[in-house]
Image (cartoon, rainbow, N blue to C red; front, top):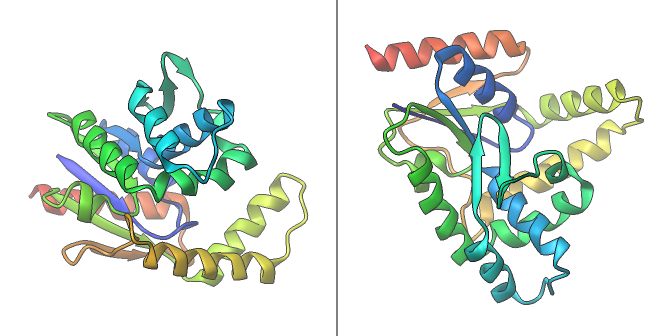
Length: 216
């Protein structure tokens, strides 16, 4: 069974998908790390970001494996390195490259073959797994997502400006929906879950109910 979880940035997809997979005993696939991995390898090789062909060549050569929340490239665990600010800033060059996008879609499909998997991203229920048995669109209002981001910063002892974070979220939403490659789309057959005011445990429990209803 394939369970797709799509939704905008900051909706909590990764956290919830990982928890849901553990609860169900399913594999968990974080597709975003695959594009981050390409960006990390490109940074290490000092590629020219205005030459998309160089990125494609890197993506073609790299052996990437994503399992149990960890990401490996050519046998190296790069999970921690993927969260650096440099990688975050450059990932768009990989994610918006049509050739790389098509390549990663094929790898995502291959990684879930004959497996029970919870996969999350922004095009999982539309472009990658259009025939998935259970599709969920996880979202929250921009204000709720901004509030959560502020809390995350404060928990790390960092200052955060709510209005600035909200502005960035609204801009990211607009960019994600209008991308030519892999845009954020709500699958027409997905169950929409708005998580404003819900705890992580409550969201996971809600999603587990949806999965069980699909199984029945």
